Image 1 (tube, rainbow, N blue to C red):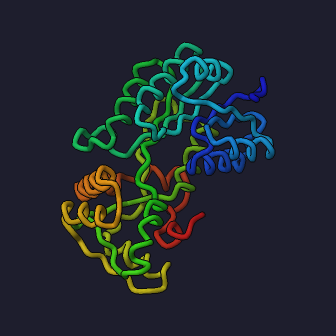
Image 2: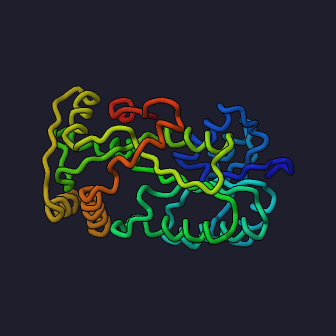
Length: 287
């Protein structure tokens, strides 16, 4: 149940990034009693309620419930969703924020969302457009690739010693969820961020050979990077038992990475953090 005094509504609070966002807000002195954590994971909502957060179970496709929830808060943190219809959900939240005359909306977008070459960011780009056109005061945080995404890729190298990817000679500047959450909390709790867009990436470009080296440290065995073609990657994933649709998506994702979507974009993230960003080895061992 949402307490009447709650002023900050966090959509996506029960997800991996949301957990860090709530912790970062609390660490910066925001009382849990002034935050409503909204999400679908009932077990996680129960945990949050036990630590003092207001909570709301919500289906973002239920626009009426979303609008009523938004109307009870003065500012909204919209952590981008993962549903196939997430754009419609985002637009519904933006519309509700406009109608309720909320003070501020903070949106976690995707790095290089304004670059039409990267279709992976189409929903982010459209959400940004809806937000800037709404007239609501906003801050957009274009988040890069999570270092933690490579934790999922440790399984193969753990047994084979090979990191195979269709990323060619790409460089990436990933950041940890914790760093990105801390940057968001900084923006929410300090002034000077009205109608600003931040591009957030790690402060160092890494090659996939660098990532393999970091995996070697974490796994305590030698790991080498082996570039493959998208077709080879897709075939290997299907042969491992993966659904062909997902295998095709991952192969196309590697092509997008090869094109540079997650390369370093500047110093916004370390500047907001006031420190260097988290390195690969530490990020690969994050909880």
